[in-house]
Image (tube, rainbow, N blue to C red; front, side, top):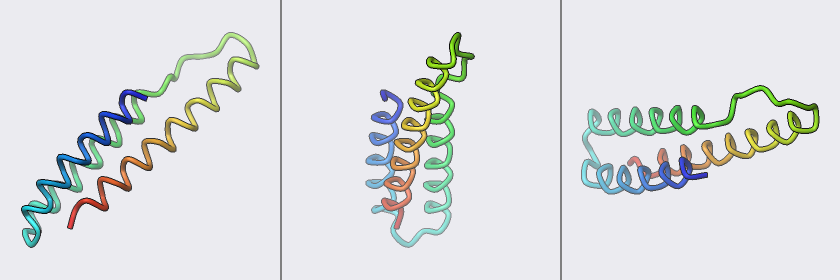
Length: 83
């Protein structure tokens, strides 16, 4: 969850920088690359350890799925901020 909040903070910073570089294609490409990097870092923060029981495994799968959804939302917000 902290990584998602961090991702949203990065998206906000990118929104400000992307707004300033409105017509600069190189800056836009760098902004998209930063969005992708942040998305990768967000996904890497998921818990990939093996669960000890099937129930724990299902709970972990559910939590990781929710985490991936939050990362995707942060990525979409970051992309939307690049103009």
